[in-house]
Image (cartoon, rainbow, N blue to C red; front, side):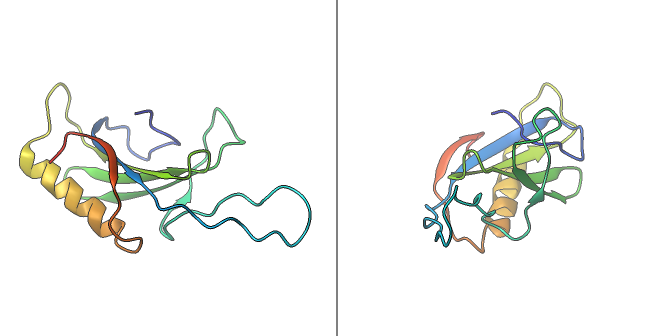
Length: 126
């Protein structure tokens, strides 16, 4: 899973989950022209520019926990997906099961305003 935008931390992605968002209603067009870009699904997501492609619109949110960071990423080019990353200074080892469960609980808490979302893919599964 490629990481989008620029993370505040340089820690590697140790675990991730891709969630499928519900389809958004089509925009109401009051004037002719292209439709406006979609809005982020969560209010906490902030613009996160991609230095290699300034036309790309990526939004992210990072929350620090004890020894790791949970990062949510949403890309307007793929508006049906919301990605969550677990970033920690772990190199060459798998994430312990209790940490995976804590990560999934943090993600569920952050996406609560949207409701439960289906999981498209994840590594590792809880």
